[in-house]
Image 1 (cartoon, rainbow, N blue to C red):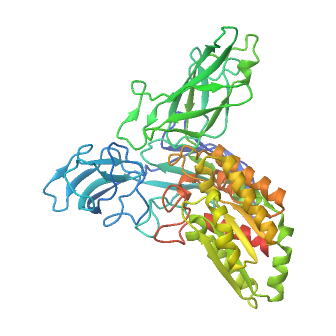
Image 2 (image 1 turned 90 degrees about the horizontal axis):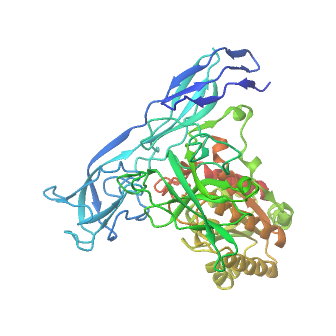
Image 3 (image 1 turned 135 degrees about the vertical axis):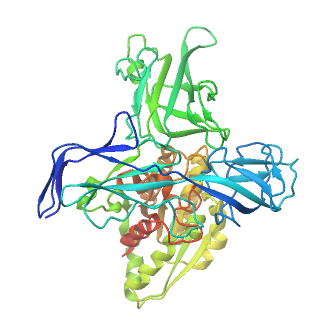
Length: 554
C-alpha cells in the first residue's frame, strides 16, 4: 500500500522567521497510522556565509563602472574565478604580495552577484596581473522536513556546496533514507527568514490588504528569493487631439540591488520607463536592475477588474508585497515523483524508421545540432550510452555540430555545409536557450522553418528539444514567460513539420513542484548550464532530459 495523508502541510510562521510549522494531520504509511494532533514548530538554521582570504586571481576583463556583470565561466576559488553571490561590501583587493590595497571604482569594478572583478581603464595594475582577494560569500542550503515513523518531525540539513569544491555553491536537496519528506525548505543568500510565498496587492487606501474590488489581480509565481515591495504608478495620457486617453505604467521596487553593495529603498528607487497599458494584456511586474535592463520575476497584474468598472479608469498607485516561495511541498511525491509526466513527448511515431534501423543492427549516426548545452552538456553522452546498452549489436556513431553561443539563425547557415555531409540517420536540435535570449521570435521562427523544411527535404528523422531556462538577471529576455513563449513556438513547429518533440522546459518551469529552486539547477555558471563546470556529472537536470529522449527513441 502506498502512503496516503491528510494535512501535514509545512508553512511559514507568522510573522516569518527561521521557524516553520508542520500543520496537524495524519499519514497512513501502509504499515501504521502516524498522526500529528497539534502543530509542530521546527527551526531552520541560517545558512550563513564563508570567508575566503588571500585568494589568488588573475585579472581579466575591463569595466568602467560597477556592477561589472558576468565575467565568464571557470573553476572557483583561489587560482580561478571568485565565487558568485559575494556578500556585498566584503570584497578587498590587494596586490599579490599584499603590500598594496586597490580601490573600487578607481582601480577596479566589481559585481557581488556574479562574483566578478574587472580592471578599471585607469587602474593601478595591468591586465592579466595576479591579485590577492579577500571576500565573503553567501551560502545556501536545502533542508528536508521529515515525518518519522514514530510521529516526530525532524529537519535533515543538506550540504552548502557541491561534491567538487571548485564548483559554484548551488547545492542539491539532501537524500533522506528514513521517514517521509513533507517539504524542502530553501534558505540562504543572506535571508534570515523563511517565507512561504503569498504575495499581496493593495492600493494606497488599503496598503498591505488585498481588496479584490479596488485592485488588479495578481497573476503568476514570484520567482525571486528576495522580499520586495513593488510600487506601480498608473497614469492617464491624453491623445494629441484631446478626445481620448490611454494609460501608462511605471514600476519601482525595494529590496536587494543585485550586483551592488546597497539595497533599493524608497529613497533610491529606480523606476522603469513608462510602459503603455492595453486591455488585453497583463502588466508584468518589472524590476529595473543595475544592469540597465528590467527583470521580471514571474508576477503580473491583471487590470481587468478596473477596466470593467463603470468609468474604466485603472489609474492610481498600487503596491505588491512580494514574498519568496522558500517552502517546496513534497507531500505529493510520497507516492513517487516522475518528472516526465509534466513534459510533452510528441510525434514519437516520426522515429519509427530510426527505431527499425537500431533493431535491425544497421549502423546509424546521430547528429547533435545546436549550442553549448548540446556540445558540453551531459545528456548527449547519456543518450548514446543508453542506446548502445539497448542495442549492443548496432554500431552507433555521432557527429556534433554544436557551437556555444549560437542560435537557430546561425544554424541555418551551417546546415548545408556541416550537417548534411555527415549523413545522419537522426538529427537532434537544441538551440532553445540562445534563441530565447536573442529576443527575436520572428527571426527564430524563420530560421527554424528553414532548418525543419531542409531536414524534411533530406528525409532525415529529427527531434526538436527544449531544455532548461536561464537566470533572468543575465538577459532582458530571460523571463519564464518569454521562455514559455519560445517553448510553445518550438512545440507548434514540431507538430506542423511532424518531427519528434521533447519539451524539457516544461519540467524546468515546474521545478518547484519537484522540491527545487530553479537557480540552483544552473550548476555550471548560474546562468544556463545545468551541469557542473569541473564535474559534468554534477546536476540532475540533464539525466531527466536524456531519459525523456531515450523514452522517445526506445
